[in-house]
Image (cartoon, rainbow, N blue to C red; front, side, top):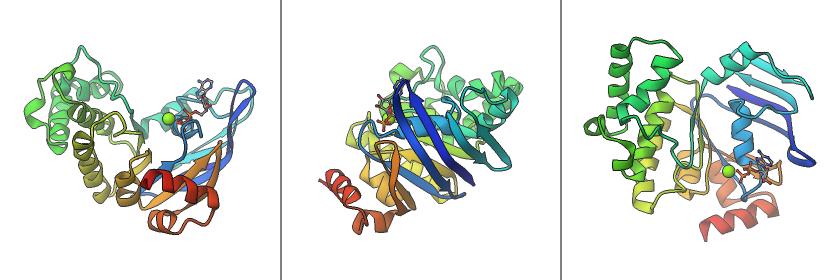
Length: 247
Ligand SMILES: Nc1ncnc2c1ncn2[C@@H]1O[C@H](COP(=O)(O)OP(=O)(O)O)[C@@H](O)[C@H]1O
Ligand SMILES: [Mg+2]
């Protein structure tokens, strides 16, 4: 389980997250929706500590970190939290000078200090899982966006994180390629991978995510089962936003 409690984050005078509290249940997908600028990426980055919250509490599994303004959290605790998360970005962020399989192996070899052969075997399994067994030796530039994103998902899964964080994983892709990525994420969901994903993709949010959280202007307006949130939103602001997604 991942639990965020009273998380606040400022950039200068702008309060980007205003006391956000949310529980991400284990073994399920939680979608994070909201207008551009509402704080979705910042919230995801706070979960893997790419950003340090100003205050509040973050729990992932057995690890809890409390944040205090002006104080850096303890480095080892940050590493322990980070190792339990995998991140998938909108623009893939593969290493262009490494092949698909080398991208997937990289963290296992450099961070986890696995021997190359063991890392290669794990990377092969993961490429197989995302349907790219025959692209192991391809360079990122020769792959379609959908294939690159699937390599990025394999890379994020390599260290067996407790949670996969996805920041608009399909929004840089044409509909056909986005569908490949939705299919992979939906397989992972059915295997019980815990995921938190910011998305504007209605298929991801309404079909793959069991729970949806609607963020507006740095605060959670409404959260609950996706089905209910999309069909019978309680708050007028949610209703308005959901209408923009469904068109
Ligand atoms: N590193 C940063 N420095 C200053 N402002 C930032 C930074 N990152 C995000 N912001 C601001 O925080 C707000 C929320 O951004 P973001 O989390 O990216 O929203 P979303 O992902 O929902 O579009 C925006 O107003 C954005 O400009
Ligand atoms: Mg964003």
